[in-house]
Length: 141
Image (tube, rainbow, N blue to C red):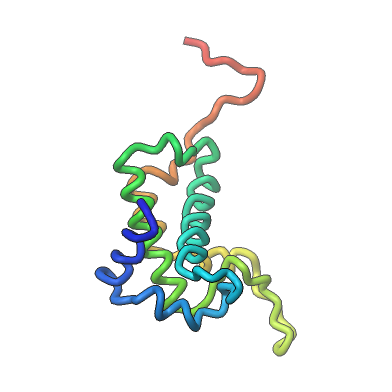
């Protein structure tokens, strides 16, 4: 899972040229110099944070090859979703000053993460909450 593979898969799977599309993408700062790298790491952070939301013990450094591939697939879906909609919904506060309304937090979270990326992670078992040992308790066999 690397940036070059991510960019190639975005082009092959979704027909999105990241370099061209990111030149007008308004959530990436123009000061970065390398919009593709910034976008790649932003998408990676969003996907890994989604996994950690469900599975707090997850560590990407100990993930196996299958999990890494599924994380990459979810990243490609999430990246395409962000570029096609033109927004990074994870940065939205929910306040609409023109209509004087507030979008609830649940709606923002649903819009922030792509359904296909969620299914990929779910089917790979990466969004398993499971039971984790509580502090002060030991498993009794």
